[in-house]
Length: 526
Image 1 (tube, one colour):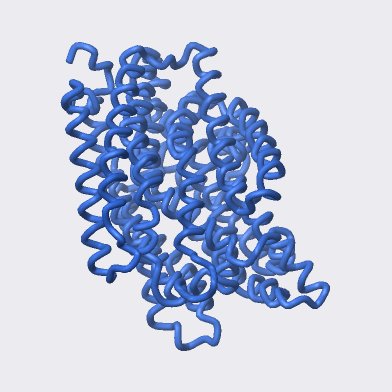
Image 2: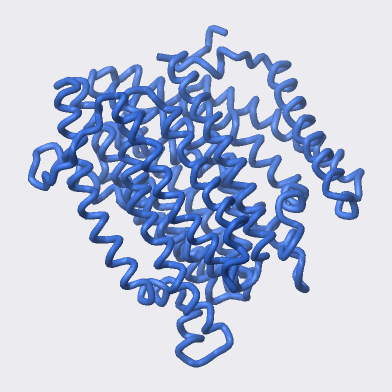
């Protein structure tokens, strides 16, 4: 179990790294094409809504409800029943998604008005920013169908994960980034507003991702004709688990969408600054947090079905330990070298135009989000502790609490520090979410943070702080803002290598070995 989880986690992380790197390339293309002004705000707005729904319904509520039920069927009834259940889930989910997609395309002006309130008010009053509302409505018609395709992709990926074929689902997002980059390059000159080429890329990416996964489903003998099965016992179980899960592990996405709505009321550029800040945070979160969460949910579901409570505890503790091991240095590193990263990725083309220092604005946003990075990652590990036991009610209760807290923090901070208040509020509410999830798991005697993991955390924190001090000192010795792009890239690579070297060296000197990180069972004997 230990080696299998670690190896699977590394596979998912490797595939995710490719996707995230291409995602940053994609964002660099968007920044170069649209900058961080009005056009960028509108495209990122139109792209965020279907992505929000995808994470909320497909990767969030549906996946967290579907995987435990699928694992239980596989464990107790065999592959034939699994094949039938997959066909029923695909037919039922696909039909509902098709209806939702059609409604979303038709009602795009209403959706744009609802979540882009500031733009709608400008349009209603004939203000200069009214064009943003019109453009957002048009772009949503192109980006909203992405929800249909990518939700079916998430279903297919969940099946692959339950059968321990993690690489397929982890690699699939790469195709979306390739599609957006290709459409941006090939179609940019075809439209007066470059955002349309990016929106088409989102649509194409959804189609390509689904087509890519179908052969793998066929090879696994899990591809069969979808069928409507609303009243099937197992489908009903997924429905029952899915409803409360909407507010569980996906609560951070709800917070981000609320931030987008509030940001539309702030100065031009706020949405773009939040987006690019969030994208940098998503890199380590997707690379490590989601990678571990992807492999840990099927493992926990299997352990729960087998009634192996001790192994369940050890597996959760390993997941938390792994998150801390990678999350702490990522947090400190981003806080220190984010200006250089942003300059390398985005500070050229349209992004450099205007009177605002966009690098500084995005860097401050990254720092605000970094405060909650470890918490974001812990949520990805702790929430499956409930979903694997088919308990979706507890996360929803905690999710509602943190959602309210996020809005309170927004109201307290946004009027004074603008978009930074929104980012900081998201981090603060995520920290509350992670704490409440852990407290409840501990209260139910499902998981208790071990003494060994506490000592391990202290060692990681000390190593990360020393790493941060060394990297900060090294970075301040250079006036890199005046350097050419290639020179900045060399410096960035050098600082990243220095950071990794110092962090791992200090951990080694403190007695941390590879088995400490790899093994699910507590490595106290090392």
